Length: 277
Image 1 (tube, helix red, strand yellow):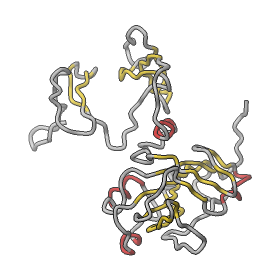
Image 2 (tube, rainbow, N blue to C red; image 1 turned 30 degrees about the vertical axis):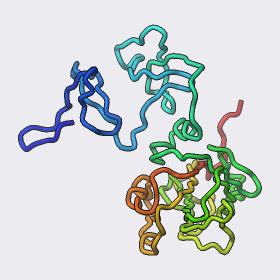
Image 3 (tube, rainbow, N blue to C red; image 1 turned 90 degrees about the horizontal axis):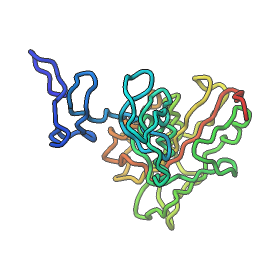
Image 4 (cartoon, rainbow, N blue to C red; image 1 turned 90 degrees about the vertical axis):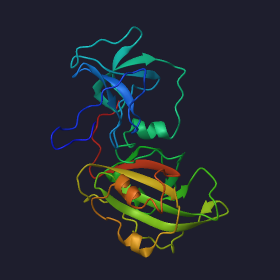
């Protein structure tokens, strides 16, 4: 968009698809606008969840279906987008497509970029009560005792003994930090966390009385620090209304935007009564 002035509001910047003359931005592209019937410059919104086709389908960013009067090119099908079936896109089957993990799973479950700005480089292997969890695993209300203690973790990659690390668990549903350990040293490539390790935010065990009622999405992330946390910085961590993206921006001098490793899981404060096949 152009910059607004006192006389003229901001307007879409016109472009030509072959000139690539759009200004710098978040993935700028020259796209045809059905509303204005012109080619205009577009860019990704901050934390935008860009619609994509389901797995093993090429994505053509052309809306289709009953809500939009358009048809897909030959060889494409009109399908619901990944993560939001209400958004219909033109999709072309392609079984040769390859997907990078764990990024694809984080995007498929709408963790990235909606809750976590950037996908981790590696999957964080977490074990609760001797059970190694899978990405996206849900703990029913009847088994919350399995989450009573902090997890034992492995980053899936050798850590550097000269670096410091941060572990954080965030409840994306309640927008709260439920565990944070900063300035963790590594020894022989492994995290040095034990019961006497001091936490900046003590581990909070999930409980049936947690609000809001229902399913809670938890993000467990490991960051390799750029610098040492100060007590002043740690004291400013928002216990309520926590947003990963804002927190990382505010502390960019300490943490990179991309976690070294991460996983996600969920728990429910009520019994899972969904029908099973």
